[in-house]
Image: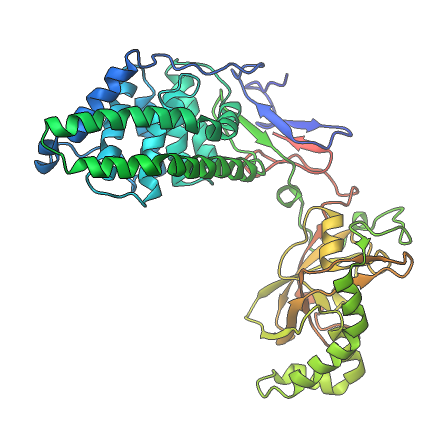
Length: 489
């Protein structure tokens, strides 16, 4: 258990995780140490009567013609509005009225407006019906609405849970676990939701004749026939959005109110420190250049064919580039000055590259293992991934070529242009039958031996995520957390 008092030097906590390399769940003050199941505090006691009363309103065409009842499900609500509304409707008593209002609004959209093909309407119906399940309840209804609005706002979902439950005193559950449970269970609840909706439609059909809305009967049967499929579609999409939202949120450490739970995964991109020059810690001690490359795999038939044809393809691409009247003059000059070298470099592309003229102060990145690493010709438009195996496999970089302890960011031009394209696979001569797949994107900057990029163009030096010599500095949770063996909260 970790605490921070009012006299603490910092308002964040640094935790040494030792050899542990898995995900870290972080639960703050007042979060229960054990999962507490959510039970709807005031479930609908007379569910059948509740559905019947909602059906009464849906079937009464007079209510709609007069514009008296507008309903609540507003697709244009902001996330903040949805949270506020959801917090209010999580209060026992208010929630049942609001659920009925939402079901009526969406029932009207389906049965009167015939908005059968608008998934957002089915989401509204499904959320209301899920709200009738005691173990999920109105809390799940609010989460579904927020998730549907923006799956990337998982932090806002947890804020909602904190406000709706902890501050109102309705319940004290773990927010992260509840959302995860909802994502895991929502698809399996389609049968229950469909059964409740079928009962609701039965009531609508019986009321339609009473209110003189017989024209609605055909619509009811159309909706009934679509319901199970649409609910499956909605539930699957909700589950996917929750999973995606949790995965994206898990890469951030958020400043949170007491009572919230988050999951934090270490993400070096946020805690790495940028330097203005090469650091000795960027050199990897004990790196074995002769070891089998991380990310290596067996050569397959497609790669074998490419290896056989690479030189022929490179020569063809060379000729095609030179015959292109729009080829930037700088690239034409380099190609004509060193044709054999140019062709050899073209063979590192998996398909014909395209030429690109750079915009002012355009950033390019290069993984390096020595102070003058900027002299190399191959660059990328993105920082390297956090996993060395993923980087070596994607960029097809052998151990002997690059120890990969750091990467740099440089600004171009100069040079004014380069070649951009797919990275070709590379055979590993020391390990027959093995290769690095390639498939990423590279930017080749042809130029003189001293390199096309000057040292003055290098703006930042960074340790790679897998370099265990990188200095560790505690990082505020508002930035993100982590590195390979630390956790900052």
